[in-house]
Length: 138
Length: 138
DNA sequence: ATACGATCTCTAGTGACTAGAGGTTCAAGA
DNA sequence: TCTTGAACCTCTAGTCACTAGAGATCGTAT
Image 1 (spheres, rainbow over the protein chains, first blue to last red):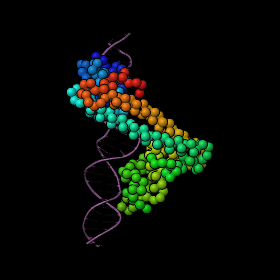
Image 2: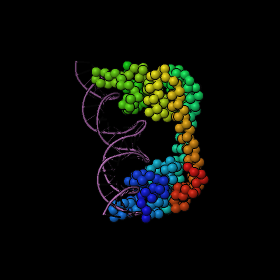
Image 3: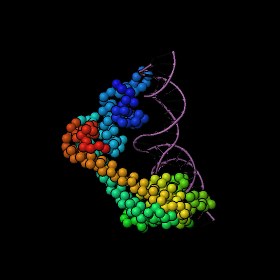
Image 4: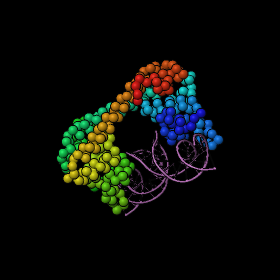
């Protein structure tokens, strides 16, 4: 049995975040000492590690809650879990696509300005004012 | 002179968002009719177009405020504007890098599961539980 | 016994909006 | 000129996933 601070150290999840996960229903409320302090065991550690890993992969709290629910029903089809992962994957891919377009545009805007002039003639500001200077849609 | 709804239509920025920008200090408070409704002119339209374009490129409200401030001082060096754009560019590149790592990991996790089994043996759930299954850091 | 870091709960703040309530104004048609 | 109804107004609260701070209590090492 260990404290919330110890759990925090072991998982690299901050203490207030752990309490937030409990409040959100992702973590079961743990046992308490007589003085009302939380005490965790290996199960709590494992659960939080799962959550942390999923968060690092960009899953939303809602999606994680669904995954945890599936874990609790080992007889349910695996398809659901796979659906959630696949949705997350296409979400990530869409974000990458969009960011790549932005990267191109920003690189172009930034390259057009050597930083020597005055803002009156600044290509950065001109580019932002006039969308027509952009090469593609974004 | 046109209404906030007309401005919204011309810029594709929603009406509450326009009011929010005004409240945030990005947009000057426009003239009002006798009945207290906002009336915009070409200057307001141009300003909002600038903001919209910058937001589409992922600049924060704070960065946009700085850019607008620079616009108001045409004698100031262009370097500052370029710095902001460059910072935004490296921010975007960092995000892309991170998302690509996530993409690989998610693709791997998702591929390992055909969706046919039951959750008990689900590779998606196993992967999320056990970080050691991951191929690289993320 | 005391000190002091860790913990507790609670409220409020973040960024960039979005939603809704409840009331007022504008403009077009009769 | 009157009426209707869409558009407008302000204000509050909600979103997501936390983060920060206040003020009080607890646990443990000396």
